Length: 412
Image (cartoon, rainbow, N blue to C red; front, side, top):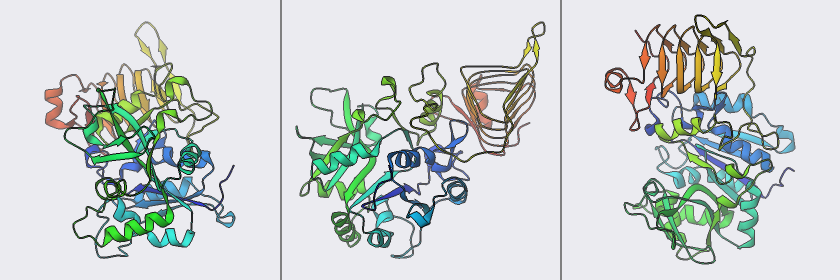
């Protein structure tokens, strides 16, 4: 069911994504391919569309051409019905500077909020992987008569320093908020975990506008929701936490409930892709009740060829995602995610890896625990991921030993 005009969605998609380099060398982080045929931005937009919200503004900034092209070719709604998914580039309406922080990004587009006159403004991040029925969060917001509702989830204490850490009372009201603390405070009674913000907020419009205007006048402010707005507001306004782990969408399995991945780092991005390929994945792309939408592609079906048992020249994929247009020509992939148009040649072996559109793997090449960006040709016999010290001389290698090869890289 399509929601009425009382809600406006604003998705923050302007981050530089430096921790995902080289995947973000030529594109914004939300435009990075994920799960074979999707872009990261598709997941948050699909959540809103599936929930019935179709007034969506996407705030872009760094290297946005690829993202803008994907949005315009995928999310084409009938504006005559008041529906839209609009990319909004940084316009420098309030000074000759890029967005200073997440709050400044919304403030510089405050004219959009005022024009729509929505009662509720959703401010969501555009670079996370999860499924969410947003109606359940909005119902919670209304029930609590909140000024702001923050979606949150427990994370291991050793990981919590990467997020905003929240303290709540027994009612769920926020009584403490600290952005990326060096020593995160644990959840009472659960010392191994901290309650962290997902970067997804619902604001009452009038309260939001007032706070953003005041924040913009403060020369000492970081102009950021996590660093500036929320730490100030919880002391005087009604701020509540929505427990994302209780959110359930149609067709969701018990194991998927509460799944949320911030894929801002290279290791997290690799792990989230690997989460897709098991027999019973913790994140399922195959639900017809909660589909993830993306741009249709004009590729032929995937093809697996050669079945020469004697020479072991067998085109085979095990525990893998293989997109349209791929040809597995006498090679073997295992726990791999292949974007459209990938070719795996004879006697090669690819495992625990992500190969993006147009990658070719030469004969007898071996690849493991790697992320290979678009249009890279792996020479015959090359080995990647088997000797990390050698790999570090040629490629970037993550903290957990994932080898990354940039888009259009020429290998010899």
